[in-house]
Length: 257
Length: 347
Image (cartoon, rainbow over all chains, first blue to last red; front, side, top):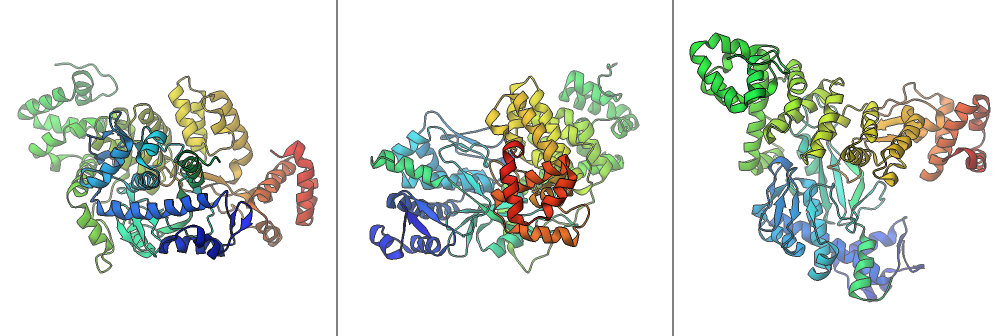
């Protein structure tokens, strides 16, 4: 069920107010038919979520096309014109560059970068927000960006882990867990992957794969006496979408929230 | 030349400690011409520290000494070579490796056949090598790999105090710690939590901050931030009440920003039955009566499950006879009683 300002919504009333592409239409239909209630303060908040989810999928496909490398943190690399490569293997945006330029450089010069799957997801979410916001707002909200798995997330990006999401929504990050991973390849103890909404997922280091293919690859990185196969977890990770929407609507559109 | 013994009885370690890595290499290169047997004896000495062997790897290979090393040393060399190979795979041909891994017609095993890693060599790497952690990335990666093997394959828990010290040291030095923290929790021992909580009592702010980061899934910890004493008190209260019902979840920093490596099994707490922290299974199978109680429990919301499981545990400890009557009453009645009495008992 989808509720805006206390009113239960139908598909037609939404599509009359928000131009929906194929992916966004699918997201709306999932929400409408769900046993879970998706509450929004306004139609603008729903529109923002649909745009951010679409942007997350687009940012995933673009990152795949960017030729960014897969590296464990100890071998992580970045374009030092925009980023400082920190000792543990993260990327910290430099003071003399705009964070928006630094983010865009990853997509423009992907071959200069290499990192693990979780950092790639964080890159995708920052890029998705950048593409929905504009560069000026993005730079104001995120004056410094530190990319390194989930450890140094900006509170306004507000990554949260929903343990019981009920629905599969495009743009969410799924975790495929490999409990019996080979001790010599701990980086494959799991794979973070963005749900692309068409039965495929983007997982950095693996590419665009079905869930079955991701599990197959993870199973290849198990220890010799493995007992448990890799499996998909129920929980999903996503940014604080409605918080980001509040900022967007408040500042850019001046409607007051 | 005589060297004073610091932490080792081995002269190679003493040279390294006092004169540095270059001096160690020079000593071996000079002495090998005069007394090869003596150098081999020093290398194969059981008191040698892993870092000395690691530093001498290029010289050992150049001088063709590898075949004359002890089994322990050969095993350690094998691990060193494998980590180096992995690095070259990742930088040169990792994409090809993944394509092969995706090929369903390919061989089932991801890695080529490799020698079994021996327990004594792994234990030696950790127990003598931990003090030189930070030597270089490759060295630290070998320490991580040895730790993961020991914890996951050999279920070795005696190294956990070393591992937790290493994790905190790396945090303070801004070094990579995620794999080591993951290895530490993979022991699946709830005592891990207690070892971390001890750091709340440290005078160093970094210790308290990192303990807070690792244990912030425990109620009350995040709100106290850098107040170590209050964090410790919150931990003690939670741990005392929940330790019999904790099980390992496997959550880690690769998966989420605030991992909860252990969770309270609400069913077990409701029935007041101890579970295995390793797999979450009850130590004793549930009776038919208990299974029937759980049928009703399963239908409750997460919030209500928490309410009556916390209440159940407290009442079980305070008045077992009363508790036994309460838990056999209809579930609605149980909830009602728990809500009514929770003002005084349930947090």
